[in-house]
Image 1 (spheres, rainbow, N blue to C red):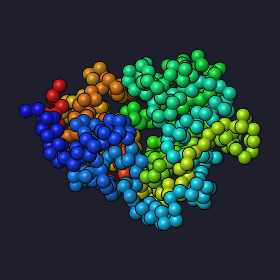
Image 2: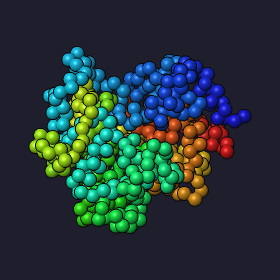
Image 3: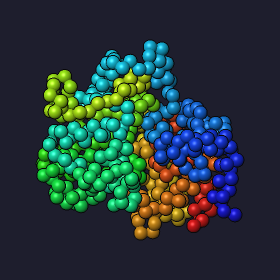
Amino acid sequence: MDPYASYIRRYKAKTGKSKRFYLKAEKLFPGGISHNIRYFEPYPIFANAARGKSIFDVDGNKYTDYWMGHWALILGHSPPPVASALSKQIKHGTLYGVANDLSVELAEAIQKIMPRAEMMRFSSTGSEATMYAVRLARAKTGRRVIAKAIGGWHGFNTTLMQTVNFPFEVEEGPGLVQDEGQYVESVPFNDLEASLKVLETIKDDLACVIIEPVLGGAGCIPPAKGYLEGLQQFCKKNGALFILDEIVTGFRLSLHGAQATYRLEPDLFTLGKICGGGMPIGVVCGDKDIMSLADPVSIRNKEARCAIGGGTFSANPATMAAGLATLDFLRKNEHKVYGKVDRLGNMARQGLAKIFADAKIPCSVTGTNSIFLTHFVKDDISAIENATDVATSDRGKLIKYHLALMAEHNIFFLPTKMAAVSYMHDESDIRKMLSATDKIVSSGLFKIK
């Protein structure tokens, strides 16, 4: 009997209400979802509650969650300090549409933790933040070309929707015209020599390099030693800006982000996810001289001003309150929080690698600190180093593995996406996940072609 067929039957048997909601959702949303990656076969679960390390679906199933709201919830779902702050703020309003005091407090908190955030602008999404960052870079340098990593994900803004999905040389789809891509060049992540060769050919028109310090959606891949430093050095030498997209890594790799972990000095950087405390946020931060190019007060001539906004819901008081409560807790409990989540992440990576190695299943477990992802590699790949290595691994096996964890063991990974440990997880959760993996291996799932 095919073990995967059994897992599918088990999944369908326990998620009947989710299926009914999905059938309704198909008639309302393209694909039945409001974010492309939230669909998985045979249909996604529909959640209606979440607390701590757990997420609950409409059928009453309780899952230990390793997706954690697109990796945003380092303190877990609805942590008491954040829930309390939100409860208090909602009584005073959710949207003022004018400047508010909490935005100043959150900006000051970010600046104290990340001093290179000399000035910043809040938005509601990471996509907006990265869009503004590259626009500022073009305004500062007077140049046109943006460089990014192959497989790098910076949101759905038009400029950066290039070389995101495999095969990377193919256009990302209709609606994006060739003219928009001609000023974007892509470099191979973790290959400094090849990256510099590409950059050298465009250096006179290079506005910036924008890069995730750890590739997130492309496979949870840490940087090779010297790679990020080499890109930064090239930018500084050639008058281009070095932009770190820290929407995932900010407050995740450490309180002070990847820029502290890897000792980098970005001209601009973007934040999101964790600093919103579970509410919508994006932030573009950096050098005050660059950020000041968007100053609508001092620069009266609109032709001289870089047009970046923020949006109707930017700096809304509910997000500001949640973000402030989150950063306050992280700052006061820095060693306790990061010591725990990093230890659990390492425990997961080592445990998974051992299980698959002992079973002689070709596998590479990537990640760093509190994030990790399993890749079922082909025989000619010894380690995952870039997005192409990820794309050419056996994605089908990873989907089956994550579905089996859901169906049989009530452990939730968004299929094919990296996991994030929260402060609410503990060693027993990691042991349970490893035990479940061992049982799935023993079921013969990975022997099915």
